[in-house]
Image (cartoon, rainbow, N blue to C red; front, side):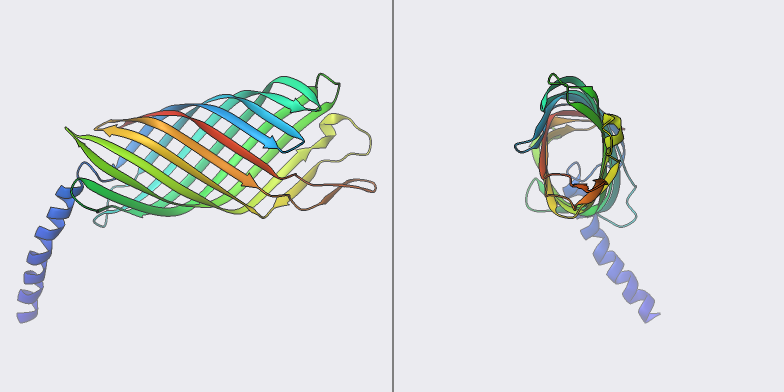
Length: 264
């Protein structure tokens, strides 16, 4: 009986503290439930001194944050699909090159108050990025193109701050480091119809990424600006034909634009 009474006393002491934290976080906590929205962005991919793919892209985004089982802890899965008709510059030029990005991630994090009207939400997880680029055809200098398939596995580690602006408006800056784990790059060289060249898959082991958002939130709505960046080093070297080997050169990607989300 003494143990039961002691436990009840502890719970009685904790409950007001939990309630106080919850009231402090609302509406500064990570919102649970579904989100859907769209993106519009300027995009630039470059292999220095070799090739560039600039252009505009549009995409859709979605996310689901699971209902809290533990106070302040959140689990979230999100994804996006983005498409652009890019311009190739390198061995000549080529217009309207189809380029698709599909990305999905899962993260776990924690909401906690960091002062009057401010909360911090650090998180970490695992992400996958897929890119398909279709450069088949010929450039302005009659150079033949081919399809590329890019796969990145990475670990996102980041933090979102939420700042109460009053009347349920919230400013939500976010910064994230994307720790590159592994990349696989398939180049379908057979598309170029050059005798002796075979399709090849290269492995990328070194690189990094980061992203930043500056969002404004109120109840069901969230909108703002974003930027994604990747820098990947040279891949390994693989044979592509008799006595010929190739690698995926070092490259960087920058994507920046605006995003809108509706939160159910």
